Image 1 (tube, one colour):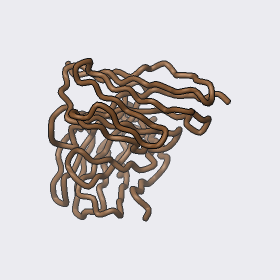
Image 2: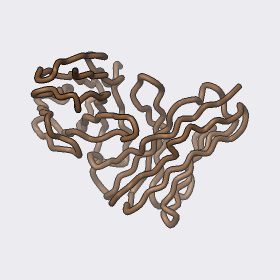
Image 3: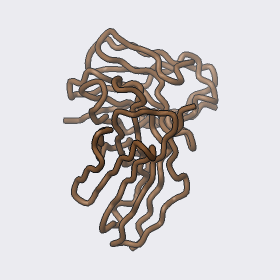
Length: 114
Length: 113
């Protein structure tokens, strides 16, 4: 069956270090993958989208990689700050069309320690 | 621009009661969706709409109804609330089908007792 896996354990990291979050998937052939940030009591907020033919995407301190052979995406936050503390969700589209089919992972909670 | 607005923010219902969760967006988006978020389960799609007058079921539609009479509004109706519907509900909208970001509302925390 189709499955998206994000590390359910919280990730604690020291301020200034690079945080790396993982999104693994099985039995999907996604056309693209998205990353969202969710703060407690709030809705998810879009961060980055990477397509299947892109290896890497950057936006300011954020970097996303997408390896369709390994079926994995890595989300990096460089020079992490306490304000980066949140839950990060990955989402992917199992088909090549149809937003309504987007599937979300359960998220990884990141805690940046000052 | 308010984005996606959901009301109410919190609600407590008794088993068997019905209610409507409201969702409105002011971005003229064609695509709107309802998700529920439960611990350890991630966001699960309940119903979605690709335009006014067009709706379809998602992954977990049972016990919920939707309609889309205007581009702006996409209400979610709970027909007869059950404790299993205790969850946080999110409405989202986007400009097109796939390859675009979704804009989410603040969520409605619903408790059914």
